[in-house]
Length: 214
Image 1 (tube, rainbow, N blue to C red):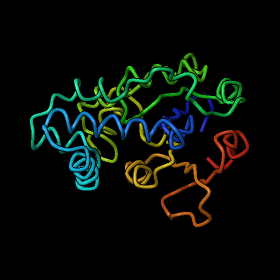
Image 2: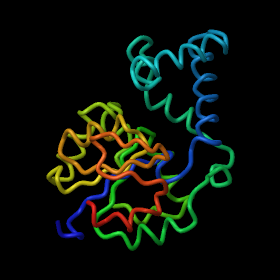
Image 3: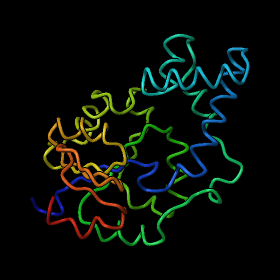
C-alpha cells in the first residue's frame, strides 16, 4: 500500500495520551456525582450504578439513556470538565514530531465528547496533525466497540477498510476494526498478542519502526 494513501485511525485516551493516572479517575468521580444528583441517590449507590451500566452496556451513558432518559450532551458536558486540563495531561514529548513524520491522513476516533477531545489535542500540541475527530456525538452515541460507529466513520471518510490502520489500547475495539478489514495496532505492554492484532507496540512512538509490517 502506498504510504500516503493510508488512513490512521487513532484512539484518544490511553493511546495519544495517558488518561488512566489522573484524568480517568476525575471523570469517574464526575460521573458518580452526576448520577447521584440527577437520580437523587447516594454517592455509593451512584458509583455502583455507574459501574454496573459500564459493565452491561460498555458505557455508563448508554445505561442512563436507556433507563433514565438522560440527555447525553448534558451528561457528557458536565462529566468532562476540568479546572486545569493542560496541567493534568501526561503524554510523550516527541508525539507531535512523530505524527508529523507519519505518512498518511490521521483521524481521531474516540468515545469521548468533542469538546474534551479538542481540548486534549490542543493540550498535547497535536491538534493540527488530525484531519477530523469522530467523537461520540458524531457517531450518534454508539460508542466503540459497537460496529455502527466504525461503519459511519468509514462511510463518511469514503475509504475502504483495507486502507485504514487503527491504533488502540483496547483489544475489544481492535477486534471489531479487524473484522471489518482494517489493520490493527495494539498499544499494550501485555506480551501475548491476540490473533486479530497485526502489530503490538509498547509506546505510541514505536509506530514509525513498525511501518513495514503494516
